[in-house]
Image (tube, rainbow, N blue to C red; front, top):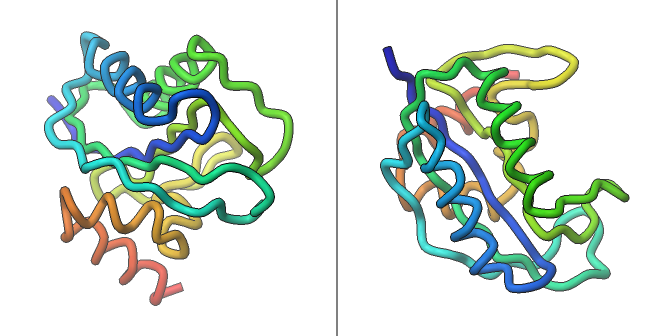
Length: 147
């Protein structure tokens, strides 16, 4: 059985568009994941910590037989393999991959909250996601209003 999930990717160090493409290639290369749609790459201003280079952002929709925690482990491994270093919150990064939604699952654990708790506040997440699946964006916004 497969499930759908939506990821947000961002980078602002090195060659961000190339890093996004490489991250998507690595995600798709996993035997339990198929990338089925991806947005165009959007240039965006930094959020939270603004004294850093602009970001390149992209969204992907995927099908996977992994559960949410297994998917999280895969994407964290890809970030690490690509050189992601977590030095400061919202700081510059070579790659950032977030699970925005997994089906319409709502969950909160110490490691993962679904849907992503800040997705509805971030145009750099919503705009690329809207390009590939406007319905999931509407669901995210409706959930945020209901809180």
